[in-house]
Image 1 (spheres, rainbow, N blue to C red):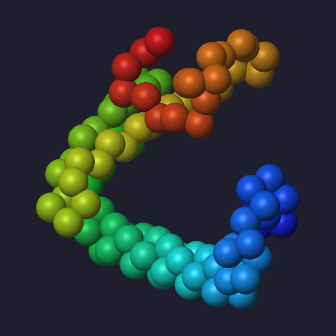
Image 2: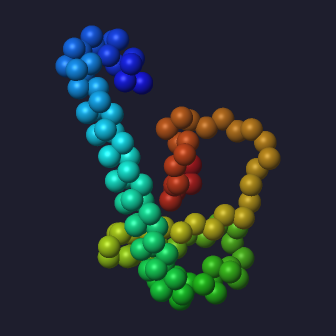
Image 3: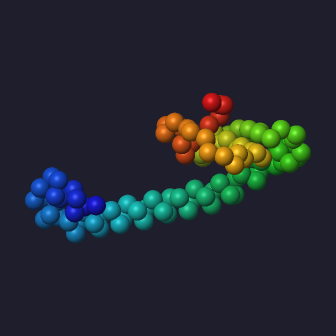
Length: 106
């Protein structure tokens, strides 16, 4: 990808600092992964405490869709969705709605 950027921009500075740029990218990716692991660990510690009072409702509710909102100070608001129905046919969906969890029906 950097090769494409160099071609398009013709940046001599980027060519001259390519090793530094690649090192910086590796560093940022490493930090990103460390943060992700930390957040998952903390969520796994906090979530059972917060979710405990909703567990029975979540398991026994007759609805095929259920939404619970929890507030976890370190993370903010967390929404948990229970979905029990899937559709085995193709449906056209707007690009802006793909790969998103929604709290409203569209």
